[in-house]
Amino acid sequence: MSENVTHTAVVEDCFNMMFATDSICKAFKEAGRAHIQFSQFGSVTRSGDKFTVALLEKYRTNWDERKIEEKLDYKLAFVLGWLCHRAADRQMKVVFREAEPESRQFPTDCSIYHDAFIFHRLYEDNNSTPFPYRKAHFETNMESLQASAALNVHAATDTFRFIWQRMLLEMQTFVTDTHDIDGWFDKLHAKHQEQTIHLDRYAEAVLTPDPDKVKRFISDTNFYNEEDAIIQLAQAFRQGAKFTQDELEAALAVEPTSHYAHALKMGFGYLQSASAYFIGEIDQDTLKDQLDVGKKGRDGQSV
Image (cartoon, rainbow, N blue to C red; front, side):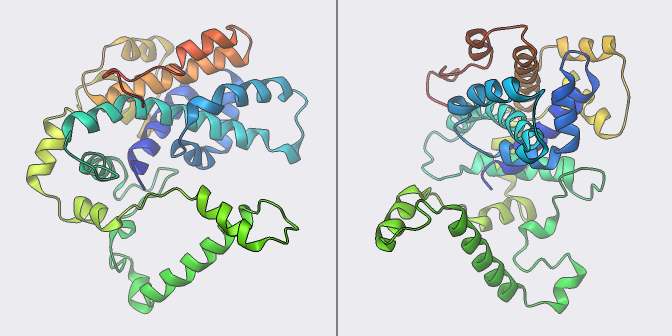
């Protein structure tokens, strides 16, 4: 779940702006509208620098002759979510390092408290979002859901964990007719990402937050500022508001102050650059530069 909620929110807000602007191509809007929930998988996928440009080139080349079974619209939505993930990462990874230079935990408390804040601010009791996060996601027994009283939650969790693991194993077949089953499992283990997300830490941040950590990671870092023009714009879009192109451009032109606002502006800019490339207005080198491919973060470290 590392930075899951914040990354998803950045995608949703950037997509809402994308749907409203005249500066992004029709293909992006169609894919985003049809498959915004699928874009969430891109929003939590790493290593975007390595693949997004090549995938955009592939989809651009084949877009007009695409076939339904190729699911290029799904794949394009995934890449658009991935671009927004990169924007959130480039903005926030530096903040995590600055806020907790001593931390060796993954994820950091700072990132967890950002997710908790965004959950409460944008998703709790919100039935008008395509990403229905609920408080039950963070509860040990999902007690806020009425049905949990009639369910053995832990047994159900174990069952679904088993089903999920089996599905992942089926997806990760390296050689479908292999006779070396031990070698197959060795490869699977080698590909496994050795990171564990401790959900109890998320539960604490959401359900019983530490006031000192809230101050340290939300207020002191200036994570989210309601006065930022782009945040006000995003909030209005979430409530169904409409804007003229001049109003949209005016809000986007205001320099953000908070980190979430910076992530939104960067993510929207990435979508604009990708759109310009998709319709042939810029070349691939220009796209890579505008997407900050291969560039260090503002603290000189990798992001």
